[in-house]
Image (cartoon, rainbow, N blue to C red):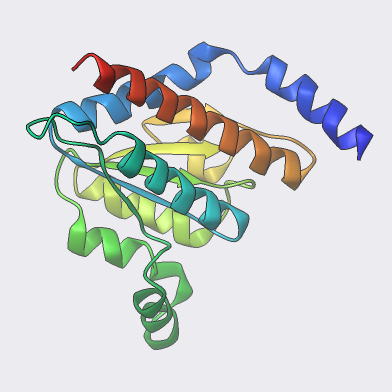
Length: 185
């Protein structure tokens, strides 16, 4: 346990705010332009995607009725739709087909992956790109997912658990950024 915490502490200390700023700026730009943010991942990263969408959607609602909150959707949260696509067609399409149906030009797609090699996230990023949707990868910088992303928040570690912890930290940092932006909006 202590080894994990020390390793995590070292890696958190190594994250430069400048590595997260492009993601924070993309989320802020999407909010300012009244666009939708779609987020996806697998396994623990699916839970992170859901958590991030919840944080962005809930914590950015202000008391000013005319000020819109952030419109964020976790593509991982519709179990019926996920299992229908996986069962009837292919698990590789579970996110891409949702984007094909829901995403509009200039929306934002955030893919969260500890490996950056998940076929369903790569297909979703390709679909997003084809639709004119900006793509962000929270993934290892030399991964297949990161190579074609518009923005990469480079997260890698030999430990999947540390990667997942770092993803949460990045998502919370972006949520805190948006909360500050909305406090003065």
